[in-house]
Each structure stands twice: as C-alpha cells, then as structure tokens.
Length: 321
Image 1 (cartoon, rainbow, N blue to C red):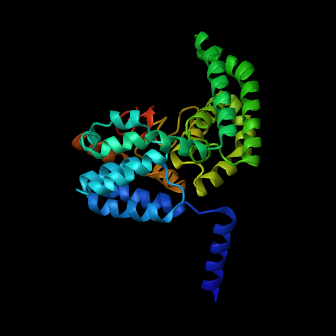
Image 2 (cartoon, helix red, strand yellow):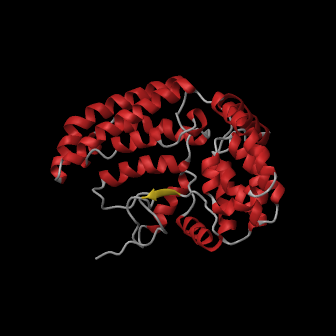
Image 3 (cartoon, rainbow, N blue to C red):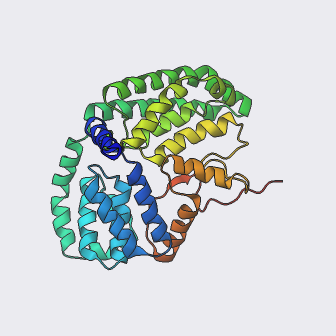
C-alpha cells in the first residue's frame, strides 16, 4: 500500500508540475562517463532512452548524441538526432563549424536538411515565448552597457565603488524584473526563450558586484530556490545554475574557496566537496568533464562543454603555497 501511495504522489506531481529532470541529469551524466571511457555504443543506448522519455531535451544532448552515433557506427541515428537538434535550435552555422560532422555534410541527405531548415527554424521559434525573449534580450543588452562602465575604472577599489554605487541599483531592478517573469512564465532559459546565456549573465553580474554587496544581498537568496526548482523541471540547466551560484559563492568567500570548479580551482582537500556540490544540482563530475576533453582531443568531437572562457582545458588541482 505504501508503494502505491508513493507512486500516486509521484504521478500527481508530474501531472501538476511537469516532468522531474533529476533522473534526466543522472542518465546524461552516466552516458558522459561511458563516453569518457570510449564506450560509445553503451552511451548511445542511454541517449536513446532519455530522448524517448522526456518532452524537452537540452540542445547540448542532441549535439553530443549526433556525434556519438557516428562514433558508434550508427549513421541513421546520427541523422535522426541531427534533425532533432535543428528542430531544437541547432543552427546550420554551428553545424558547419563542427569538423567531426564533415562526412554528414558530404552526404546527399544534407541537401534535404538545408531544404527543410527554414521551415524547421520557423517552427522552433514559434514555440518559444517571443515576448519574454524580447524582454530578456533587452535586459541583457542594458546589462552589458552598464557593465562597460567598470572598464573605465582602473583599480579594484574603484571598480567596487562603481559596482556598488552605479551597477547595483540597475542590477536590483533587473532581478526584480526576473522575479516578475518567474511568477508569470517560469525561468527564461533554453526551454522558454531558446537562450541559456542572457539571464545567467545578468544574475552572474549581480552576484559579482563586490564581496561587501554579496554578503548583505537578499535578492539572490530570494530567487535561488526558484532557480533550483527550474533545474528540477528542466527549465534551467545545471551548468547555468552553477555559473550563477558559482559567482555568489566565490565572491562571498573573497575568492578563497572553490565554487563548482569553474571560477576558482579546487585544492586537493576541496576536490571531493566540489564534486558533491556539482552532483547536488545534476552537474557532471570534474573527472567526467576532464575525460570528455581527452575524448575531444583524441577524436575531434566537440561536446560544447560549458565553463569556457573561465576554464579552457581540464580542471586541475589548485596549488597551495
């Protein structure tokens, strides 16, 4: 009876709140571990299962699966996931930059994809919330212009003064607008507006104003639970949250502690704690990320790993003087 009750609760939760993406991230991380160990066929099976199970798929996972299908000698699946990726926002420009997919572009099927591309692109854009997209894009542009002011201050103290006096009031208005969007439409990330960079940048700027500001700020602490909820329902990727929260943790600690491994490398003593933090939000382990970089170099694949430009290569142990 207890088992039936639990299943009923889970069923009701999915019906009311949508799919829970905790297992999604776990499965994708498992697939990436297999890729890092060159077990491409086994990894592809996991991608097949995930794509059949969830309504929304992050574009990055279609991009990786397209290449893994080729590595596993499954060209038809590669074509299938390439098309699914395009229908989820993958542009022809981006595909053409991927040298690993060069053979696909030389196949006769590529002509049919180019023929259908505009239609698929229109369909993709039609399902996005264009009103929220325009609003967030405008917020992002304003944020970038406001951030430029810091470039004209040449000392760290001067930058802090500018950030606290000039940028902070602007940023507080931005976060207030985000709260309104969260209440009306949910988190404006890839699923809602087709972009996972604009709002993440705005919140990262907010969390990097200064150590003194971050220590007393209450706006981010108010928003943070909503962001964690967004991860659970697939509206926000774990990487996106890690960058936002990473800035908060790193700046608040005066750059003396590691975050998720992106902004501040972990010491040997911090390594396990950083991996636990990553796991808590569904983000791949440092070891898996480093292994994927090895596979990129070995094969020429591009896994579109996030964390760049802060971390271009592997995340290594920080030397302590």
